[in-house]
Length: 374
Image (tube, rainbow, N blue to C red; front, side, top):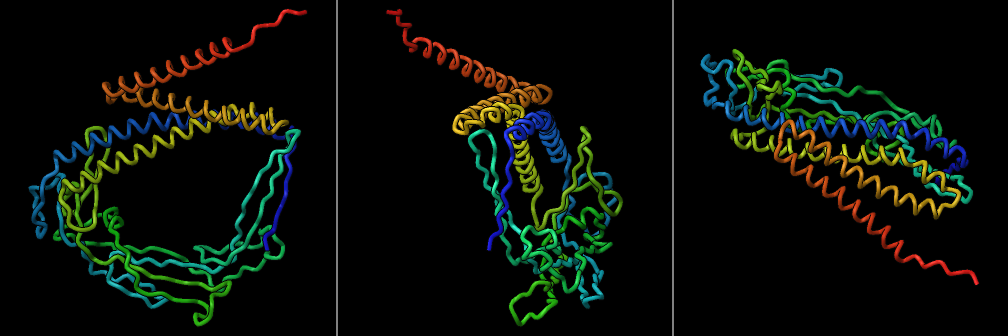
């Protein structure tokens, strides 16, 4: 059965909390602004670094021997990443020739889930009803049931054996006559399940405390490397702007395919961070002006109307502000595009200001003339 907990926040507490939230809102606004600015610089610098790397990248067609002519050059090479090492787990008797060996652990536990519903009361108070439900699930770490809200579920969890999860890597991985560095070794992917162990009675339905231990490995495989040669190994390429580049991709890919994918990833990340910056600015403004809605909570229906308007205004301001910050950042990197953005932002400001004046004029014209006293 579900367990519920009801809490009540007075009108005075809500007003006080809303004023306290102004500081947090200002910090969110500033963080969003900084993120928007930094992201544009990061995006442009990454694009320039990728273009520079692509222009300097040369083909290392033969990796069967170390060629000193390629030392210090950024190369594109394909081949087989191999290792002779045997990775082991003596505790479970696992041994495998692999680049990576992973041990993952799951525990069967009671898990608490909380769902809250909040209602505004006439007079400004707020009532929050939190419903707690409990389910048996496989989780990655033991759950402390002593802190559960429902007394009937406290202390029900146990663990038959705690097992540490880990990843082990081969110390040496060859790439033809070359050796991959640590970062490259850890970039090789392609987990393959190899064996699992069950601590408990596997013939029955899972019981609280049961443990599953699963092993997987990354075996030697074909890879594509773009990196700078350093003797018989590799290091990251450093562009003129200080950004570095070194990549390992699974399978056999051309240099153009790798760089095209990296350019697309850079653009995708740019838009994700722009959205995050916009949301930080918008919710920051919302926190700053939240006290207006809270002051009107004595009449919830009126507060909801005002809240909708505050949300709309904060969203519009955040949109225009984000465009301005992005445009100003681009003045250092993309002057022509930044001018276009400034024009769009200016047009948006002019449009909303014009609409506001037209609305006021229409309201004034529609207002009935004052009737003389009889």
